[in-house]
Length: 400
Image (cartoon, rainbow, N blue to C red; front, side, top):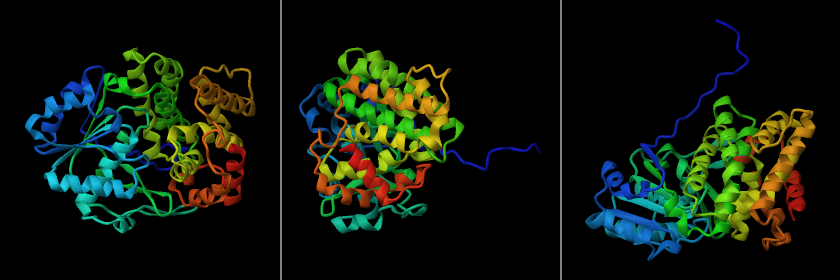
């Protein structure tokens, strides 16, 4: 047997039954519900879509199988909102969940399925199933029941929540976002239809696209990076560089919007296989503390984190630069890494996304608490440069 430079690694294929994409894919939602065995469907709908053609399509497609439509879920999925949706699911006898919207209703649907399967009925019940992480590499991941209510996800943004078995739920008392992880939290089916995104505001589409960029970049820079996820991340960045800014300004270009939805799908494989890094770990806690979109935290933190780990990740950052359209042939590794950071910053400028904590209304005196919470976030484990609380405080100060 020949020698290998690789240690034994494993790639986990997400346990989704089907991903349907392209203009008109949403029209088949009724068939997907039948395929997963749904007879009483609770729809978790983004508030912006209430009364929209999307809701009308759902009602027509599901007919008598529609048990109810639930909306009003707040950003970052507070525990109380999950419990309220779970009560609605129990009252209606729901045996299938359909989420339509951004990461908020999608993560809420995952958490509702968890509540139904585990019997969580009070806020403290979430503590029994939360992932616990101690830096640098100690995880406690509680098991969930094998059979959860099936969930079909229809995203209207580029957050990528639909492609993972991870859910984030915020403890309102502490403002800390907890992570919940199990393969069975993965939606059974996913619909990527650019037509459904028509009502998504241009600024939200652009900001959520930065989250997809963050997924791809941090997957490439992860200390656990592998060739398969590298290839997917590079292609995701190539598609986003070509179509993200254009599709934000031209929502009627369904081809460009489809490419961005596909790029988001490609970008997310790294998160569940090689991890992400500091931008995500810090961003989770910034978002929960200051009620920020994750796309904004990515725009704020990603370039700074890339600079922080440049000495450890310069060859990977060269690939980021090239995927974003930079010719690095005459550059050494440090210069190529600097070019990658500049390319990301230029994309942020092109999108018009705010990129400082001051600009998004954060409170500077709360940043030390954010740093402390981030050090307990599982995402930071994949950063190739060892990190301390002081490092995190320094990055947050630079982000101000």
